[in-house]
Length: 124
Image (cartoon, rainbow, N blue to C red; front, side, top):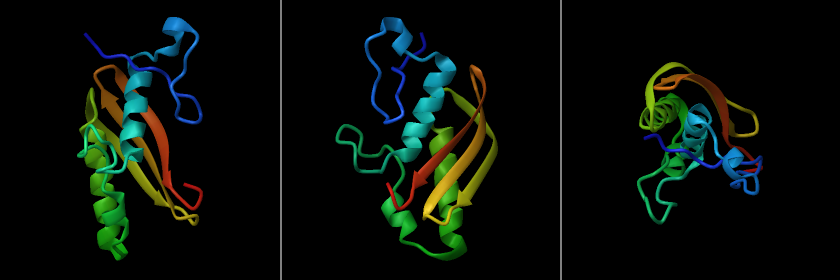
């Protein structure tokens, strides 16, 4: 049996009020799971302190080493997400507003998923 997840609105809050329509299908649930994991900060979730990425320590580094560590952590986070089988494309873009844009295409047991996640920035 596959897990289903509540759809999230633009503010990353669960949606309610429409019964089963508030739940995402397998692809939507997997996409939301990946995005949530990328945006999570390690040691910030009381019931799973290992979830997420250790953004504070990674982003305190400088230079190409830091960029390599960011990409490796994003790659690991995506690959460890439920139902993901492989990453077919990953682009990590460093933006002027100090955010990182991760554009990725992954294969899952439900088919291919393409998505973009913006992490951080001055308004985060």
